[in-house]
Image 1 (spheres, one colour):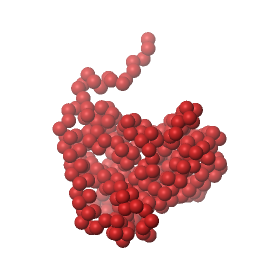
Image 2 (tube, rainbow, N blue to C red):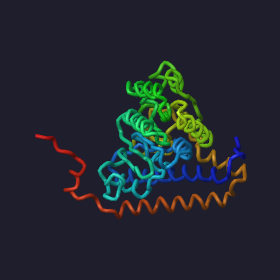
Image 3 (cartoon, rainbow, N blue to C red):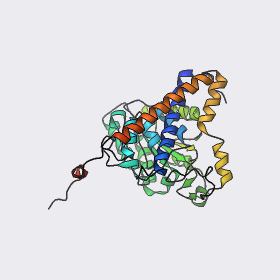
Image 4 (cartoon, rainbow, N blue to C red):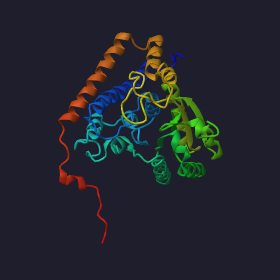
Length: 332
């Protein structure tokens, strides 16, 4: 539905944020398929609305933690695109100095506190971040993104309990794309009701259409307000879908010779619910921008992505003797 009550600047900011993520990932997919990129990549194509909508309502001081699929979270929080592309290419100019690759990215200057590949691995760290903010009486919230598979780890429930007990300034954002790697949620859970877990721990709890960026922005703003004021922690379950495979760059709708565990009709249905095209339609209906203005905006984003790609290609690799940096030797 149209969102004519929102400022055109906000709608365009959300649109740009999603475009930056989408075109970054599509360019990265080219590098993966060409074997220029050798680090495993879990692409965020299809889920852009979650990162864009939630991060739009955060301040620079608010902290975000990610997962193995966090290029979108990093970019939406304000991370440097050149540094991200270079990191994934394994270059010294990357945000982790070329040491981390796709799944270990960080930019504390903008509040992206870090991502790592262990399922649910950043959830307890985010609890520590929120607890520290509470003890120091900082005016900041912590947001931790994770997939539906993470809720099957014991640490998720331990973290929820502690956050609920202490009313931490913490927002749990579950990106429920229905699959934990290759296993559908109906084969893993007795009920598909993750957000209701929050009610057990005295939290704010909501389920949102994960392909509606404006709905996510509004849910995020509400959650931030409640968490920042000390009312309670919040869990947001965003119902979304990844349009490429669990890992790698194959587009299963375009390459029918490659099989995916998911049904091709299911893929097609979710492709029709593309969050970027959905917002574009709303912007045009609201007359927040013209078709020509949106085309110009997209061309600017494409130019930014191309520049980041060139930066990554032209940047040097770390020297061999530098690979021991940040590695601590065992004490005798």
